Length: 218
Image 1 (cartoon, rainbow, N blue to C red):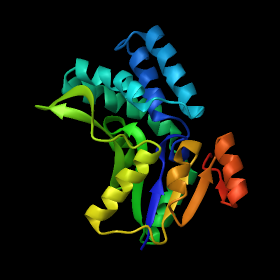
Image 2: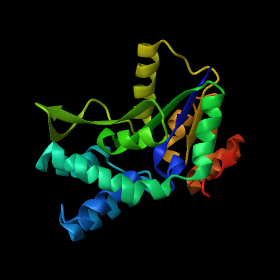
Image 3: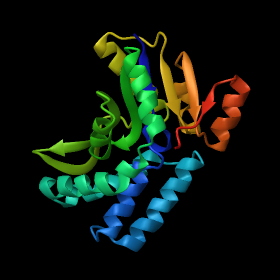
């Protein structure tokens, strides 16, 4: 029994849930659509270029959570999942997850996107373990701040090792699927790194290291 780890955005999903959450908020008039679209696009570009300041982005992306009651947030999130996320769940990604499930592997999503957005997506895939950036909650309300270390770049490695220690597991025989060069630190740690519809930097790195390259797009 090995650990099968999946990045989420542009890997299991055929799109980016963090980016699309911002689009959704703008479409619903929950945030200033023009301002949010400009900033969302800037951060997404910086992420793809490997230049993202994760704390600056999280200050931006978590702020709306602090401005509305939890009941409203959860209602919006349900609509977001139905409208924006379900269409991005490919049959190929479902089959890959199911293959590892049938092999008895431990299934995990590890993502920099915050847990408010990603926890219901993990449920769509019936993946029990999620390591995501955790929004801070005080007295049942989101503060707009981050709790603990974001699971981004080397932070994914640190958060995963903490999980391994807490659950008495190892990376023996482990798999990690990702699309992004930002995940090279973790891809280098597993026994079976796989590039999924990779960006140019990861594609080059995968070829140089003879890693498998696959597509999960239908």
